[in-house]
Amino acid sequence: MIRISIVERLLFVSVVSASVGATACRAQIADVADGGSREENRASAPQGGNVSSSSGRYEPAPEAGTSDAGSIGARAPVTFLPIEEDASADAVSTSTAAPTYAQGETIVTLATGQSDPYCVTVDATNVYWAANGDNTVMKVPIGGGMATILAVSPFATGIATDGTSVYWSGGLGAYKVSVNGGMPVLLSSGFTNDNIVLGPTGLFGTDGDDALVGVPIAGGMTTRYTGGSGQNTYGLAADSTSVYWSNFDGTAPILKTSLDGSASITLATGHVVFGMAVDATYVYWAEASSGNIMKVPLGGGDPSTVASGLVGISQLAMDEANLYVTAGSTTSTGLVARVDKDTGFVTYLAVGQNQAWGIAVDATSVYWTTLGNEAPQSGTVMKATPK
Image 1 (tube, rainbow, N blue to C red):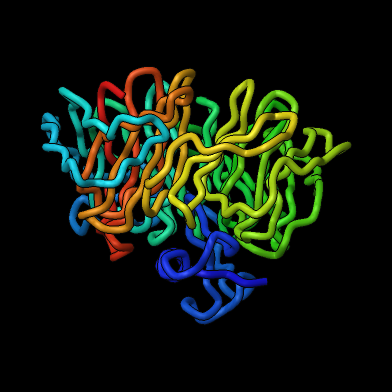
Image 2 (image 1 turned 60 degrees about the horizontal axis):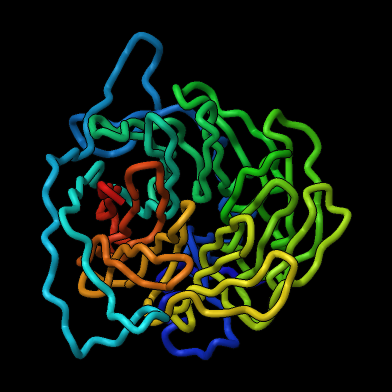
């Protein structure tokens, strides 16, 4: 089984054809880069923690009755000014019109000093993310304020919330903790540090062989649904009946697996899947090797292109009318865009984002993370309103 880092993956994608794999919202434990295998790198179980106001670094939780939490770089709102379009630029939409820039966006930096904040999620109160480089699960109020640690967890990456608990995957398995903090609960040791998704029957992710697994959110038996290709898993989505997923492998199929595991069908093959989303009609995915957003009907059929030209595309989020995407591996190319699901028309919400990565939306805003070229404490958590 091959494990590669985000930097290695970005270089890999830039020189291979669409027949080879690429990825989405988190870093794997790279055997070569980290000097050991996934098993060898399993350290200590997650625990509570906070942010040191004196050093700015993440530290274990203090003893009862003490506090050492501090702010991580909340910023005042700034207005995003539209940039003049370059008429010679390649179109990134399947529509005939060139992409536009959003007018009157207010962009806020919610947190700075983050190390590899690959995945992000949001509820009505807070934004949550997994800072893989510092082994922390973090939160900050959606309106801005002090960022705090919910848990310390080795290689925390995939993250999700139902508004009551926060769930994440890491080097030791799948965990949950109250949105208010407390002691993390191990749900399953059968999850790797790949992406995860919440479905109506539980939490879904993949195991060490990148086979689909699921576990009830209240805890219980882990179910192994179907085998994987032995590559990383980044594309993962769920609806009321099925889980949709694909391995990081250009030859791996995009699968639709029923929540009870009784059936699994192939929707498409030959695609390199990063982020994935699903609505009542289509499964959508970000295809890194081509820079396209693709879709296929839920019942199967011919895949089609929603939008193209989004170089370095990574994660997807979705609301009723639009898809939201992060793309670009440097400050000069990093961007956040809104894509009309019907027309494929692209609107840039933010540019100049240094390696934009994780993305989430709520009713009014879009939230994303930047990796800052994966340098220590160079990542950020951002917000744009209106979306």
